[in-house]
Amino acid sequence: MKTLIKNIGLLAGISESTRKEGPDMGVVHCLKDAWLLVDGDIIAGFGGKSVDESSPNAEETLPESDLILDAEGAMLMPAFCDSHTHVVYAGSRLKEFEDKIKGLSYAEIAARGGGILNSADRTHSASEEDLYRQSMERVLEMMAKGSGAIEIKSGYGLNTADELKMLRVIKRIADSVPAHIKATFLGAHAVARGMSKEDYVKQVCDEMIPAVAAEKLAEYVDVFCEKGFFSPEDTDLILTSAGKYGMKVKLHANQLHVSGGVQVGVKHNALSVDHLERTTDAEIACLKGSVTMPTMLPGASFFLREPYGNAKGFIENGLGVALASDYNPGSSPSGDMRFIMALGCIWMRLTPEQAFNAVTLNGAYAMGLSNIVGSIAKGKSANLILTKQGFNEIGSIAYLYQTPFIRKVFLKGKEI
Image 1: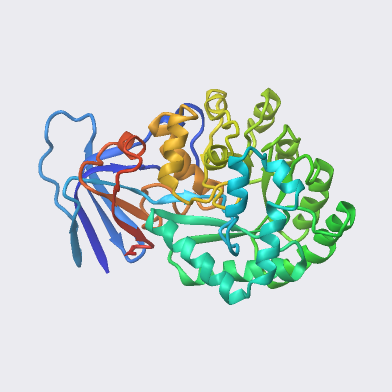
Image 2: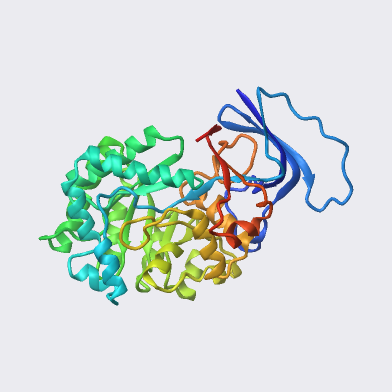
């Protein structure tokens, strides 16, 4: 079935690139008075006028279609690409929210048995069916807010059975929704209760990774490379083990300290290194010329009242940046990528164009999906957001960050 979307005031995010870096981060190619044709689940074609054309062109002949949708002058853009989430979990951590208000830090809460270990206990107690039900509610909410590609991590299992349970839930979600879902094994999220770190790292390498690989449940592997959790040496061992099974790397790095995580991630050709609240010139130098996408999580900075990543400095040094939600129960309980874009502008001083690229094409790259989603290009998946009237400039998305802006969301060519 062919669907024609006509009278598009602004068709935003046109790009054949796989990622944006340096000055190109500030460029969003657009057409005005545009149209776009969806054939089945892909973008079959589009057209319109250059945004700087002052004189009208001759009326363009629109392609034939089975269904016509009038955009009524609104904006059509790629769906958001959220490359870092932890949305498979049970229960909530409301009590820890109250502890944060009282002044306890993330590290202090973790040291008292809260944080990741708290979620691990709740995940262990939940049945697979209940875990799936709770997690699906979050994914459906994210899709309704415009996310069309979502990475989901395990990491609240901390033993082989519960990590596999989480990953099976992620697979069920991927089979149940039209969004593109990527699964990441994060067994090394924290050290399980009652184990030494050395024994736990050995279990991750010798037991968990082979079990995950045997069931083909995760494409990526991740480690929380951070002081008090897993050292660069631990991380190197785990990533080397996962590499033997063909798993690609996505890495937690430099959230609480300058941990050395960026360097070990780049060594293993990580697809992304994520968090980066604390970095130096050494991390920038290490990332230059690499395949690794620096990914920053302003939702966690906002919720924890921690520093924001130096996105502006990275871009000024020729790097690209992705922004992701880090949707999780303890440090960023939101999957609203429009809010993440606004935080990028307001607190990280990104231009609206830079933030737009960070939550679309670069987010897709950080999931290994930028040849499929993240921009308007012929042959890409028709993951699209049609805005309401009045949202026909890139900056309006972040500026009016609480005004409802979505009229329709299309994933794989179908309205959700």
